[in-house]
Length: 263
Ligand code: ATR
Image 1 (spheres, rainbow, N blue to C red):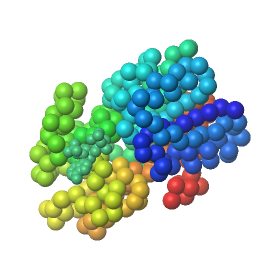
Image 2: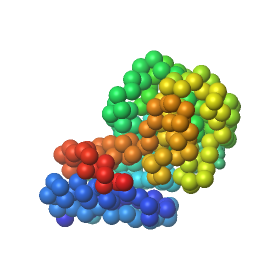
Image 3: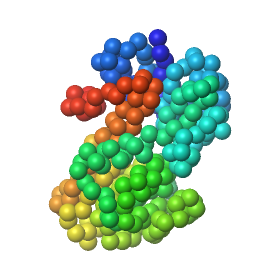
Image 4: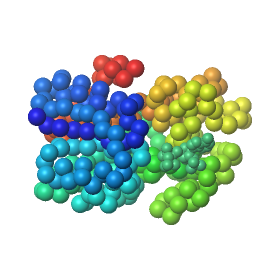
């Protein structure tokens, strides 16, 4: 019986077990995927269990995507570039840290048929998920990437890695084609991002990494003003699919049933 975990803190609300166990069952695999709430001091021992083949794979979520790195033997290029690990596996006796959030975001955008080539993109937030989104946007040939974060020093830190991004003061809006909410604002129903929607021409693309609630106020107002909107559900599903593929060497289906499962 193979054993997989998603680790984080908090972890109660993670939908990863539901999704992975659905794919495990539909592919008749002998495996189980569970969630584990951890303290940072427990990371070392958990990674040892991967090295000893007691655990077959781990997904990592907030707040450990970066802090798990010192315990790993090797990083993939994607994890190296973003300093963010969401998928762990054993290869040739080494515990590898990989990042499938990049692939998840790319596949989600392709799935919406939006063409990033030559677009100006504004990312709100310079937290854990932003480096993955920047790498994905670069892979898809975005023209210009702006970053705006309440705490400007965090945006400046990102610029040390991604020199081509332009920092925009929090609260000001450059001319953009697509805007991405990569902050945690909107997780709570009453939270708003202060944007003057009337000053933004319609027919822009508003993307929210948040998928629960499915329609944040950010997306609600954008839709009302005639913009294209998309939440983070497909990104979540495609990052999970990429992890599953690495661990189980087969590609699980992303179909309507999977989309409904997470409603
Ligand atoms: P971390 O900052 O620890 O990496 P995260 O969940 O990955 O955590 O990122 C949270 C993001 O949401 C950050 O960009 C954060 O902005 P700050 O860097 O200024 O904290 C942003 N965020 C959270 N609450 C916010 C608020 N009330 N207003 C504006 N931005 C907020």
